[in-house]
Image 1: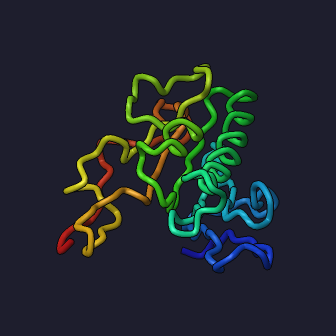
Image 2 (image 1 turned 45 degrees about the horizontal axis):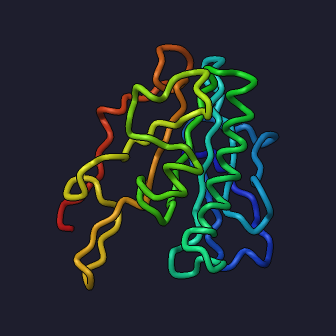
Image 3 (image 1 turned 60 degrees about the vertical axis):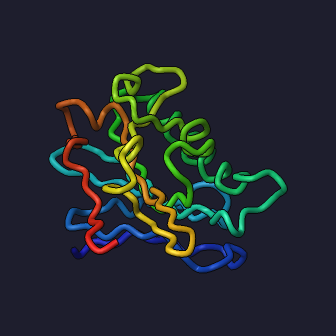
Length: 191
């Protein structure tokens, strides 16, 4: 892994948890940028291999404990809106674009911010080019917590899937970049 994409966050970004991409494949530094306001932790970069472009968004959403505003989830809604707006613009220009978003969303796949604002679904048949609104396929959406949880609160005996990966319809076809959703796993031994 010799290629790194990262951008400095604004001083008012809260805890310094800047998203970063480390890759074996070259990353396009000219197209690497932060999305939204500088205090959001949303990094976009591009990986180009064999002539195929992958838009890769890595993000770390605000926690539920430090959510801003009086409406539960309002902080995470900001992240979802920024990422969805970028995704919608990309697939409007190129419906079969390869787009992958991942990171610590600090929310479950079924939460309002993920399912209704970012438009992530576990229904693969609903993730098609030209859908309105454009949908993303959540690789961990609808998965059983005993095998796919990414966070576990021992005090409450509660498991959740906060770390997520979602892909565009272009990642599910046989052109350019691709992904095999059936191979997703989360190491949970000892949890």
